[in-house]
Length: 258
Image (cartoon, rainbow, N blue to C red; front, side, top):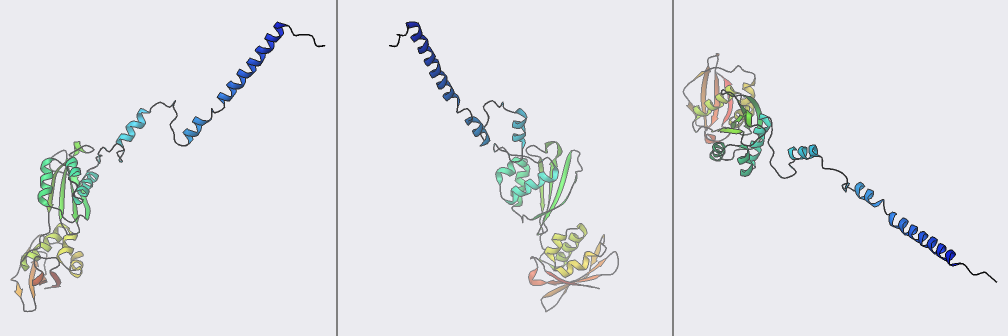
């Protein structure tokens, strides 16, 4: 016959069982501790990471403008190119950001020329603290964009946007004069706009004259006018101009030495 347990022994056994049960519960509650690490690896931000002030500054100044804020090029060439891009895409909002109001009006008055621009140069302007950048498009139009150096990297640095369009003359002598002026200015795009390729090639290797004289224009019955030019460098040229193309591109069809 088993001897009865004492009351103190029963109490001790009960306490041991309770402690074992509590320890098991505590271990079960601690088991999911790996889940925050999985979130971090998937791209979640660690709750303990403090905001990085330098990272925030870099993000706000980045070209992408993560917050949607406009950005402004810090170089004269880049700034002028940004303005030309806005001009070509008719983006009035962007033009207002990059140019002063007087410049915006110049752009509106100039209309929307061919937007295939070629960079020519950026040089200091006659007035101190400004830069003038020159670009020419596929039609020979030339724009001169003046920039305030102190405003580069900030709004409204463009203080002037002059546009000099190629305007083919409606008379043969004036048409040839426009071609020769483009040659003197090194405006190859305008030369190509006014004359055929063989005429442009004819003048590529020749010395540019400071001035020249124009002889009387000879009109013929074959639909062409012939313009004689005598440069101060000696010799002379006879230009063959198609009458029906006056006021239009490529009216100069040929040239020979006089």
